[in-house]
Length: 303
Ligand SMILES: Nc1ncnc2c1ncn2[C@@H]1O[C@H](COP(=O)(O)OP(=O)(O)OP(=O)(O)O)[C@@H](O)[C@H]1O
Ligand SMILES: [Mg+2]
Image (cartoon, rainbow, N blue to C red; front, top):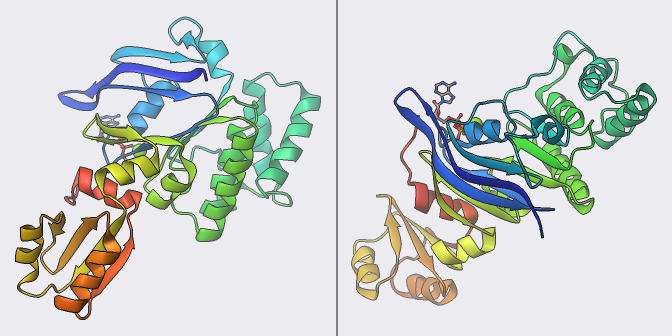
């Protein structure tokens, strides 16, 4: 496998505040790589430095094996980007937005028509091509932003929260499009606040907080390493439960009215709890990436 993105000691401050604090990671060819973290963790700043929108303060960046300081134009031509904020032109139609963007990449006009038609179909925007962007719903705008990001047939796709605000149908549609693109070998760098989405789409991911990387790995490995196989949630725990858990060395988080128990042998523990401690309000479920995220980044609001 070859590295598509190689970031070393990337750093960015805004005045005294450090947004990205010397992070390093590598994205391999064909991977879907996730950047997760609470609000303000530094995900967008990292992504913007990678696609050259925000200048790096320090650190090195190689994309497609080439240093970004030496061959930026040719690198940029091979990247497709969907930014976190919608930056479509609201006064143009769907088709005009795509055509205007194609002009930046010097795509021959015969090819533009072909690509626009195939991307309108790929993103299920056929029939909307003459609609004004300002009249589109949020979901349709997101689809258009994806179509636009694919116009230059990129080898690296960068998506900053591509599904925020989308309904479940649109989210699933986008996931299936990303699956299609992955099958074609496209490398994707993605941020999301939906842990189910990250667990489903990402081959590997990092969780960041306050500009630093906390962990890196495959979703299932991270779940096993930081949480275990199962989680038991106990609502309104009885008085003796905390003592019993501490005595048995069972890892748990105390949220007052709710206890979250982490275990590799959830079934046995669950049976014991039902038999001796809680007759109701006890739920066994598989551990998820969201458990990892909350265990590592805590439950305090960030901003
Ligand atoms: N242009 C800017 N000027 C000053 N501070 C900034 C600027 N851009 C980002 N920041 C700050 O840098 C930090 C990281 O912001 P960033 O947008 O990268 O976070 P994020 O992880 O993308 O968050 P979110 O999940 O909310 O999108 C935040 O504290 C933010 O306020
Ligand atoms: Mg962001």
